[in-house]
Length: 503
Image (tube, rainbow, N blue to C red; front, side):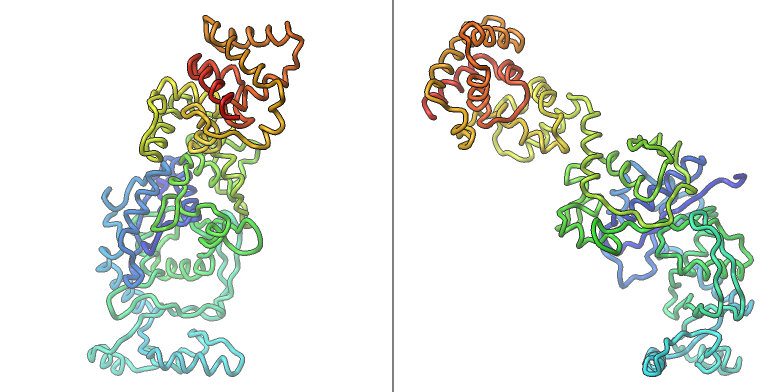
């Protein structure tokens, strides 16, 4: 690739960024970085009616949180700016007029009422109304009117649109990096609107002009834009511009059933579909996902590295990624697999790093906390004992709350099963052993208790089950002697005594 690779992610600020949009941004980012190129963010806000306050800032924050920041875009102005289409609107009309001059576009003055009449008329006859070569001369436009009539209408300030004049009886051969060769019969194309009399271009014209002026080399976008590919290629041809290479990414599909993943699927299935929260909708960040886990699972939705490898750092993704290995067919979204990824990344983190996150979680979740819950050294040790079963930092509380507060009740089923007639005497004896153990560490405590069990020919189950129940409140948790050692002698003995009074 002799020309510098330049790609763009061009969302509309009409609401939050769907996880599918994040994947489009990610694939653009990976491709750019792999080839030493630029990743551009362009805000396509030509449709001011659908503009949502705060959406642009949301997009920027989401990309930054995911760890895929843009090189150029709003606030990072380079030579190709401005990067909001609303600030570029002075550029587009000249190109629309150039297309008219070259005979590739025309003024159309049809009112919406007139077009509705034609649509309904076609529907009644079982046909679909398409504004193109077969009826454009019967409609009100600069092809059916004389030059004088057209000018009169323009001078009178009549509403108009500028439509592209789709060619007749041609076959266009298009190439897509992911989908290969695509052939289109131009007779099925409609004469799309490129420019409106309010001074705003439609998506199609603005998109082409901006990609050309920003020297975009590769357009990597969602499959929903495939129907526009023929028009975009024809626009490049009509303006005598070299078209970028195109790659259309497969859809992200629902976890079950047919169709693409929607906000509703997330609400129904109880999983996020936005990177960060938006209004009432939780994002991956707020649900406790690590950004690197989100990036990893998104990369493998529709892209296949060609190996069994599932865990990739961002740098490994950049090195391995290629558009040729992106699948044509949609990728099914698996909420359980996203948790699996988060689990893998949580296990990779150091105990200390997790302890910092866990302390922050505790401080956000509880108004008053015991001192031990904010003691970094203590929390780090707790994390090391319970993290193996955690998918999220928040799980650490569920898995290890007994390290911070003594049980106030005991699991009823476990009590019925574990608490026998002689259990109080056995637990009293364990308390005495703990009290006289000098070096109160896991190995010593274990050795002393087990020696007593063996010497008295007791069964381990009769002692260990009730002991865990007393200390934890239920039959869960890591090695019981690790728990005792971390709680310390005083707390451990105190819990046994309290249980003997309670149960």
